[in-house]
Image (cartoon, rainbow, N blue to C red; front, side, top):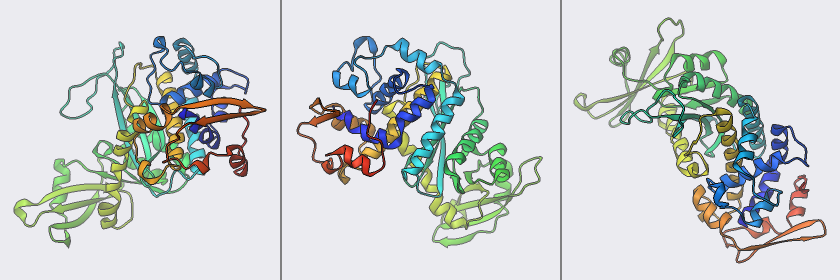
Length: 399
C-alpha cells in the first residue's frame, strides 16, 4: 500500500505521458499500464517470479490501473516491440523532466560503465569486471551522473562486443541533449582513449579529466615535469601530451605524493579543461566516487541482474528502473533527514511494501488510507493531495 506514495511523484515527472509516447498508446490502452507495473516492481526492488504471483495483492494491481497481474509473455512482448532508439528517446525525455525538477545541480558529471554478469545461453565475448577476476558473460551499461545530487542523467547499454570508448561517446552525445550546458566529465582509467578525449576536444560541450595509465611514454613525460609544492608531501606539475598521429596537445597534470625522492608516488591525469590544476585534482576529481555510491545505493532496483542479452528488452527494462529511481528520489525529499539516505531496498521494505492501508472511492476520488503511517513522512505533503498538485499546475486525473 505504501507504493501509492509514489503516485504524486509519477504525476510530477509526467511518467504517464512519457509511457504513452514510448508505447504509441492512448489513455485507454493496456501497454502503458504494463510498463507502469514494471516501474512499481523496480521501486519495490522485486524481481518477480510471476508463476508464484508474488505481487498479487489488489492494492498493487490497482496501483497500475489494472485489476490483474500481467504475465511474463505480455511483458516480453511489450519490451521487445521497442527499439533501443525509442528507449533512448524516452530516457532523454525523462532527463528533461528531471532537469525541470532540479534533479541535476552542478558542473561536474561522472561517467562509468556498470557490468552485470548474465546467465544467457548466447555465445558472446566474455569480459572481466575487474583485473583480478575471470572473464564471464555480461551486459554493459554506461551511466552519466550529476556528482552534486548523485542522480543519473543518462544511460545506454551495449553487448560486450561494443568498445567502451565508442559507447561512452554515444553516452556523452545523449547527455549533452539533457544538460545543454558546459560541464566537466570525470572518469576512470578505462576512459583514457584517444577517441573519448579528442571527441571532447572537438565537440566542446564537455571538458574531461581522466587518469592516465603509467605507460613508458607517460613515465618519460613525468620525469620532465617541474613540480610545485602545494603542502608537505604533496606537489603538482604539468606538461603537454599528444596522442600518436594527432596534432592536438592536451594538458598532462601529474600529482606527486611523498616526502622525499625515495618514496615519491606519481598519479598522472589528462584533461581538456583550463581550470587550475589544484582545483581539478584536489576538488573535482574526488567527486567521481558519487557514481560508485549510486550503484551501491540503487542496485537492488534492477541494476544488478540481467537475464537476457536481447538489448531491446534489457534497455527498456533499464528505462523503467530509472523512472522508478527518479520517483523514489523525489519521495525521499519528503522524508525527514534521518531517513533520506536509506538505500533502495531499505526504502522499499520500510515505506513502500509493508504499510497497512485501505483503498476506497468517494465520488470521483481515490482515497488511500495508511494506518500507523511512519513519522518520518511529512504528512502535510500528502493530505488533500489533489489540491496540492493542482496548485503546482499538475493534472490530478488518473485514466
